[in-house]
Image 1 (cartoon, rainbow, N blue to C red):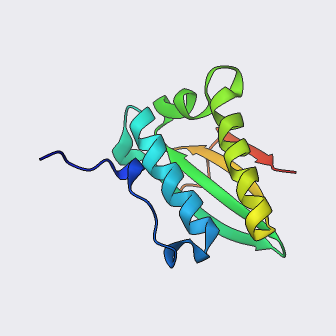
Image 2 (tube, rainbow, N blue to C red):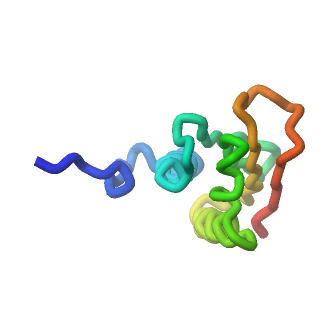
Length: 117
């Protein structure tokens, strides 16, 4: 019997009433397949202000290149995916990537931020 792939496991309709939860969960599952240190990766979302949410990706410093991608193609794909959600829930999303072993550390020079239009 084959073990089911968590990327192919659909979300229930009740879980996806909060689109940010679904986006963060999907990104975490997907990015853990891409990085070298999946145990160090986590994805969180917060509401910054009216109609603006932030998705924060915490990753191991050596995985920063995997998350951003060559010439920023990976993070551009993440932005494209997230902008599709904007059409559903009406929020703009800011994507921030922290390269840190400690997600509580605010002293991190490797921060990438971008606002989806």
